Length: 111
Length: 113
Image 1: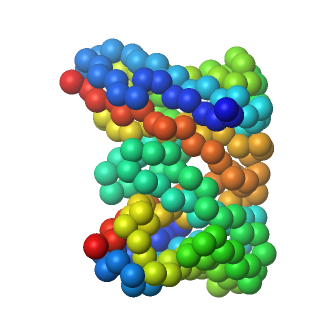
Image 2: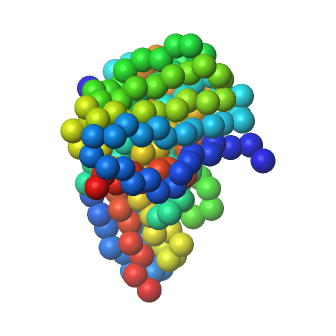
């Protein structure tokens, strides 16, 4: 079983502040790294998929970076808003093995 | 609208009964997945199917069974052999089984009474 770790497990952030969290994954047999946002009572929604070392992706106030050599990815949220409250999952794709998910970072934005 | 549907949203079962969770997709995806989520845990893979009439065990397949008779359907049966079936179950699909993006249904919460 592959080891995909996310930290922190949970995070409380004041509205307007910026924040970031980490996903670490195996640095061998890398195919893709995915980030999902999972809001309460909804399905996990794909945010980013990154495949190349050094990739940076951005969607509005949310961005992500990828380092495949050392096996980590960061997700950044700039100027947090209440609607950013969700669990953020990362998933490691090793090619033929589908995706292995981390346990998620549960983000709560406090007004 | 293209997407994945799961039914029912909530399901209650008496101990000792088998129960089947439905998952349907109209995305024309070849691969389909079943995950289980428990509090404080990540998504754990139960079964997956890369193509019709073929499926493989995931990390926690014991006490579950699946079938893939049609491309768009991948039902999961939780049998009485599953020791701790109360959980949230998510179905997903992807174009192929190569580590690409998976698209999720809304989930079924199963409670065993």
